[in-house]
Length: 96
Image (tube, rainbow, N blue to C red; front, top):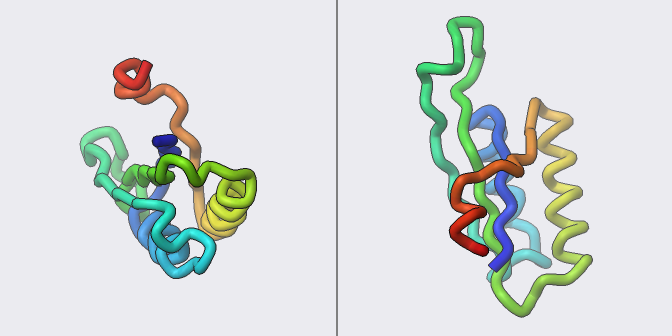
């Protein structure tokens, strides 16, 4: 199952998770998990807590339409705040 992981402010990622859950094309296709990041590395000037969102796409439904819809919702989240795709995840090595 493909997993897309993004990092950003927790409140923004929660809105993204709600958007993903409410989208009719993604119902039953995606599972979303939000994990709070370690607060020690955030510094004192952060306005919101950092978190990661993992979007798991069910096997057999990986289509360009699904990715396009997720990309659109992530772009909307970027309009609200910083959202960065994480490409260097340690568990990527386990998937190989």
